[in-house]
Image (cartoon, rainbow, N blue to C red; front, top):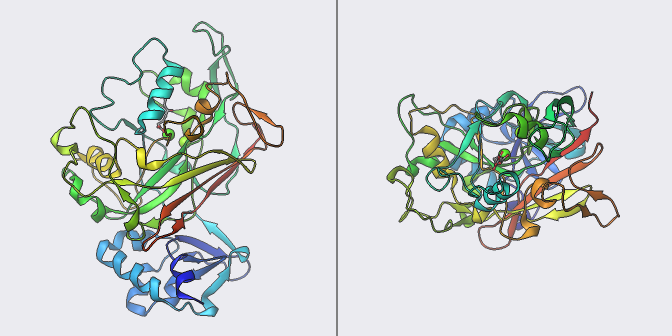
Length: 392
Ligand SMILES: O=C(O)/C=C/C(=O)CC(=O)CC(=O)O
Ligand SMILES: [Ca+2]
Ligand SMILES: [Mg+2]
């Protein structure tokens, strides 16, 4: 196997179990259309740091081991007997999610939702430019790519247009996606001790792709004053593969200019660039519907982590914090259907003639992303895929 080809496919870490009798869960690294049983292929000392049913041990092992493992994998000649065809394995949740937080850090997305949902009011809430707004989500309903999503029931206003519609119960009629990037925490922090901006890479192992499924009618009725609840907690999908920060060295970019200047604990001026030049692609039933640019996120992962812990809240191995919906300034860069269809007012027609505002039963959404590769070219991140099943 040629080294260039290998190097381009060794940045995806996950968990899998072979189908059939040897169905034991283990850590895997992607090699093209195959997956390597990583602990079986590494030398014993390093294998011990990786072994387990998922990435948990590796996440907890910390940055020195992450660097060693990534370096070892990059030069590994993968033994044939430890390579499994993707078709012969089941991909599992790559890690056990401890706490799940979702941010709201795309200025374009936040302004779009302000315009759509709160016309006549300022597009951004007064805190938005001062801190990365977020909420704590439901870790137990984070599911791996490929898991079906059952259309949720809930309360909503009968008419979405008026404030006085009847309150009814039933399956959501405004099921949406949110294309996001998730940061996967490896190393815990101590209760009472904030994690400063500069310590980001000591705690965060890598990134995955996230689809924060959202029932807009349920959300719109329930969200004030405490924020999203059942409108988003029914399912959140993540890619089966996590890309270590160590593989994203060529992807760092300067974030947009900030005005006003953030408070000192969030001020990243003069630091190494904290944005990531990931290019997302969103497909509905196989058709490309959006290309959200992650480089334009207003708040970076390091700022989100610093804010998340500034009150002394501690981190645990497996904590997941998502960026918030990734939307760019252009109409074809919007990471949700509430934006793409402007809350249903502007339906889109797919190349095969299907017309959509929000999602219908049977629809499948796939989010992928690429990043600049060290030495030129691009690498592909894992995909996050989900199909809508009818309400039960
Ligand atoms: O602006 C609102 O009322 C709602 C915003 C969202 O639903 C977005 C959200 O979950 C955070 C994000 O993904 O950016
Ligand atoms: Ca979200
Ligand atoms: Mg969700």
